[in-house]
Length: 349
Image (tube, rainbow, N blue to C red):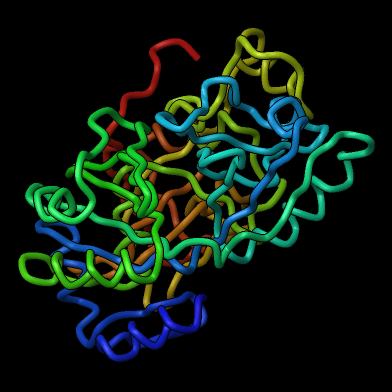
């Protein structure tokens, strides 16, 4: 985190933990406001990888699940990075500013992803760097928060994944049940935006923003789930994170075969649990039968204002749609209750 920005957040009342800004004094209230009102969040728990050089676009095109040719200064996209077996090594948002591409992903995924990408640069004229301190990264959500954001930044992007840029930085329209934006700007720009938003919106911690991502059905790969899922298992194709028309990338044959020839046996669901302990990515889900095998794995979790935790979990379709109760961690663990995602599953897998 940029030191001057961390000083600002501390003066604003931020409490920190190993996940970034934990809260501003009342986590439960922040979670509630995030689901119903106008909020803004520091997103320094996300990092950035930059790629620049004359071969950067061609290199990245050959690595990721989405079509990088569609990324320019007015359009971003979700994408994924797979191993040769089609298992996701990372998920991220890709955007462009100037002659550089940027990947926004959890901070604890930056080092491993950067190391893996560098293995394949070979003679390509591309430079890959940890660019996490290039911008202050903020999230803004709410039906009327955009009006305050517009006061500081100017014109805002209208369509999902669209980007608006000026000398202060850039704003990206992101999915959400309520209008959502991610902002990449300077310390000065972030300070001005914070002071404007703080009149009609509430600052929230990392968990509240994570809850919004879960509500929106956005998959995020963490170290615990690296290489656990193919893209379709986490619904990446349903949030415009996979192109089936582009050329080759690591694992492409397996991902394409799953789409056109295979039958998808697992996919991602939204759920709730009243577990007494905080769930974590990678925790397994079981049917309520002794000595049974796991039928799923958590993708992400965040506390819910009504108690317990909100979850995204990859589950066997047959188990999820059988009506049987599923349990977190062990066959006699906390039960989970499935909830609707904001996007539909296709009728034909």
